[in-house]
Image 1 (cartoon, helix red, strand yellow):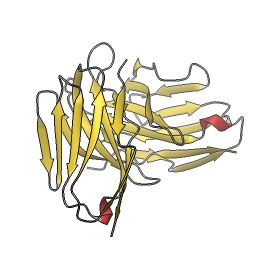
Image 2: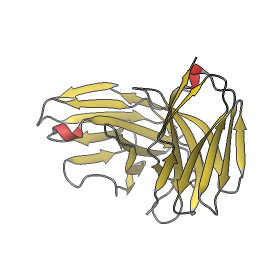
Image 3: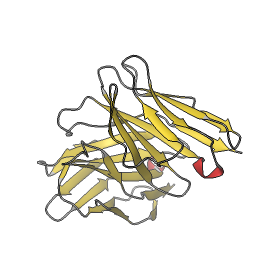
Image 4: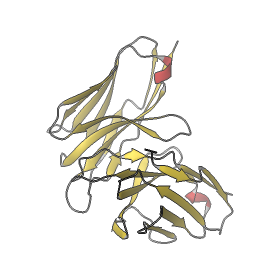
Length: 115
Length: 115
């Protein structure tokens, strides 16, 4: 059974800092890994999608890496801003059986960037 | 191209009533996933449907919960005889499905409150 863990559970940083969010998963049989952002009381916004054959993806100030063999991914946020404050969720799309790409989520990292 | 549409956004039901949650996938997407986010918990997979078929309902409670995705119209998640513990945010995601490697797009969710 796939399990996804995110560390740290919460992070508070001053504006301008570069930061790293960590995600680990127990079963390397995945199609892809997605990072999402969730604002309080809102839905999920997809930030980055990394296919199982890829090592990293970049979008603006965000960079996500994937090491499938060790079951790890990191989300790097450069030059953080108060508007980055949100919960960041890591999710893996499981492969095989009847899984057909259903997502297993981590518990999330609550990020606060203060001015 | 409108995103994944869920309605209602907020739903209040008294204990014992029925709750119906609707999800219209993105245009061209024939695969729908339902997830539940309980207070202070992560998102958990409930059910995966294709048009007129339930593919995987391993995350769905055995009683009171049902889901459908008819040939025409939105996917429906139905909860009969709701109880306080059903209070949660219910999210729908859709994908076009190209072997599980595609990005999942989420709706804004339906927040169910049982009083």
